Length: 209
Length: 209
DNA sequence: GAGTTTGTTAACAGTCTTGTTAATAATCAT
DNA sequence: ATGATTATTAACAAGACTGTTAACAAACTC
Image (cartoon, each protein chain N blue to C red):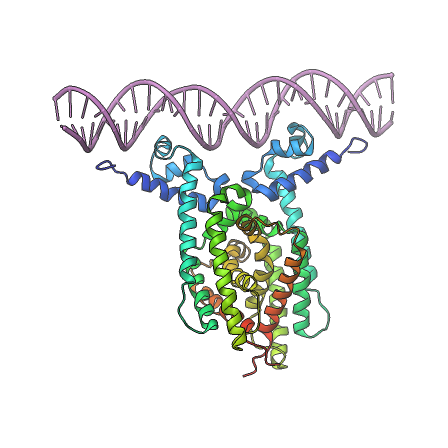
């Protein structure tokens, strides 16, 4: 662990993250990971016994990053409800923008092996439970204050996540169909964020009728 | 081709569709497909030379279904713009509801092998081009009539697709996290469709200020 | 510096998976 | 009915991929 370059372990992890995010568990090859990390594939099995174990590392690291990012979003101050939602949308969008391949990775892996998800199931469900109840309370308050029109917390949350996440998921299809490269296009993503906030704000604003 | 039960070919196609939709190309096994179809795996290779070729069949059939469904959505009559959009959302949502695994399948395969998408790239891009220009004209008309507030056609389209498609994509994650089964829950999907239409209608309605 | 632990390599074993082949049966055309 | 075509089976070939092992090197401990 000391003088020996243990950066090999890091190199393996980095290459593995690339490979898994790109191709998913089934498409990933341990030989390819080893090659990209610049080590023999025996080394890979020396540091991480199995492909599954290596994947677990990446999956947890990745999920941790995501959950952390989301948690950060909802520790908000005492501002008007609509403003807090707008800020949450902003931060949430930026978290994904910095890790754009993460949502598809998560969805893909859970879809093909739901049991793998069991580990962080509890974390998410208790977290979501708390979030939804506090959110619903805030909503009820804001509604009776006449600040917003009524809506379910779960409904609102799914609205927000759909709008913020889907563009990143559909990006490969969009790029394949148009030939454009959205990574370069920061204007596109700025506009998208703005539009999402606009949509949710309009959804929340009480109707004038 | 005649008296021989060529339903074996159909059985293989059916089993292959299941397998590919469920596990993706990389996760699918031709032996497993053959087993589920009730044929030897030599038969599979007799009818479809390679796994790739079998996949192409499924991919094309599947994409055709999707594109057809989408096309159907936008052949609309001479109703007010907002009403047409609401109806398009409704039909689009129902198409996906009947083929709920299709969007994730498409996105997953395009993400891990963009080149495979080249075949239907042209269809989609010309289709989308036409759609967007007519849509933009309709929007401009409706805006100058004071029916709606201004919006880009591409922006509106992405809003609509995000809201309608994402819930189906995230379904496995939702189910894994909650332990619930959304397939049974037709109320959930009815509400979701309603909410999506509500959101887009509010987005389009001119602001009262 | 002798011995122990840790890191590294190359070769290999075993399994899984795709695809082929050669032999056999069923169906069809005439 | 006979020959040609199509369907079907079982066994096998080849390769890819994961994981192991045995031998060796480097560093670390005392």
